[in-house]
Image: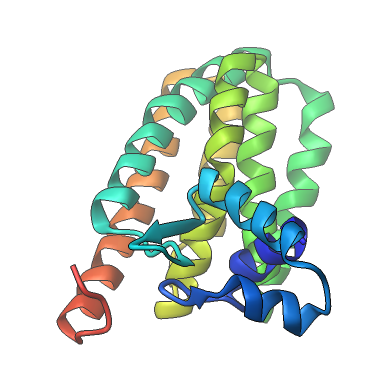
Length: 212
């Protein structure tokens, strides 16, 4: 039940602000209320669900939520890039080449689901090469929220970013062994992503589709 609800949220089948009723969910899935209750509790801990005045609903991110997570990403991922560049060798190139090739296909096809997967994979590869287990743990803990935020943005705005070109720029800096350049490219990539998110969010707010 937990996996079903989480997938429904991350895939956009359950949208931000949508109310969830334990009894109705249990009845629709023909299961007892206990697993539904436990799944909802777990997802509340993960911040994908919120409880307000006894009502459970899908989390709706605020602009500050986006900014805080992206500030964390800049701090950790730029440093991870700097470290990864020092350890980068030919053995790592195959994974990145495959990821970038598949990203190009996903961009051409407009495959948002696949693009989200490949984006997560690209950033995870860098964290892995950095060898910093604490960085990896922190980013794993917020990875669900990052995935959710990307899904939310794609749902409200046709997220037009130069993700492929930006990832290629980071990759080229890693290959060259230039840690400072890799860190700058990653910082620019994440900050540009945030600017697109801010623009999309404010557009929706002006349209009255988001209540601040």
